[in-house]
Image 1: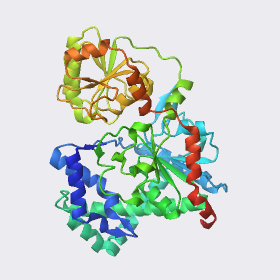
Image 2 (image 1 turned 90 degrees about the vertical axis):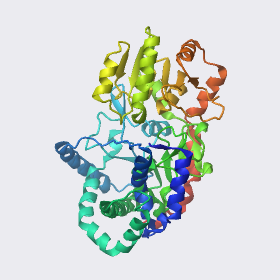
Image 3 (image 1 turned 180 degrees about the horizontal axis):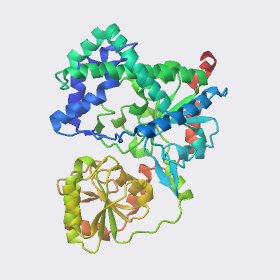
Image 4 (image 1 turned 135 degrees about the vertical axis):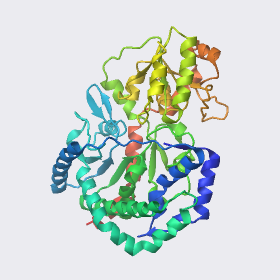
Length: 475
């Protein structure tokens, strides 16, 4: 997720508010709320030179076709069931493999901890790819059949949306064009994106009404905007799981708040994450803890430690800087091995890979293994501000934030007394390797990923029952 400086965030907010971009609505829904992330990213790329991350998989027609028929069969079976569904989960697209079983680390452990039985998980694949064997496979419906229907309807209906709402689209395009570096083709992109959103909203609204859904829970609100708006219209409470470490303003969460695109509750890993950076009132952020950590400790086989190995967490925006820092440290500490773990959206260039191959005690490790699983093999972890660093702290590891080689890590606390080791050079890295964790650091670790609060989640569902009295009206 693209991080913003405070100045950039304020500028975005000012531009959007001055141009009144949120006032252009169709069916009472702001068009800008639907498309803004794309054009915020474009503005950041043009003004700051930061390209957005991409997670598009290679197109695989055969796989998509096979998955479509599987999805269609699953959806028909789901539709024909008369039983209403209490809880609807919108699964995360990246899964972790734990002892040969693929797991959604945000949702699957909670299903087990709460001992749920009346629920459904809708899972979107990456170009039709769904990993197997899958935990809770019998309760999963692939979304490819619905997605294909939406694609087809978009082609048929888009011209009618353009004709009927042309003035509204033009108003938004003219207001945003210069500030967000739009070209003429972006006008048609806005029409297409909103048409797709609205078709999806209508389809899911019918499904939710038919199945009398009581609660909707999803990971990363951007992936379930249409479903969230449908839920808001039906009065169904929406919960969003925290899906990463966010220490500052971001393209996704920052800016003016449109309540139709904000969940009713945001479910956080620990007390450290209760703040304004998620674009929601802090009173609606509920700390539920981290069920996945408990799941791993119950499930995993014994993992052998990698002694004298240090794991470095890289990210797409800082690949060159991480390589520079690791190269410097590897030469200064030849007895240690430096393992670089890439972000799921990151790839080293041929030049970067060639540079790493010249250093005997540096290598790139497999990032397809879940980060929590990989971290259990290490005692030392380092980087700038990757989510992996916070995961490592929650597991009791010694974690360094590197402050040289043009790396500038952020601290959640102004005095940098947040439990991390802030390393400004070679000598300080040596002290980091020799240091022992203090009681204060151990206390801070518990604030990052708290133990899962089962009773708290059940109580939260209870107080979210503001909709229960309206269930009978959803026919």
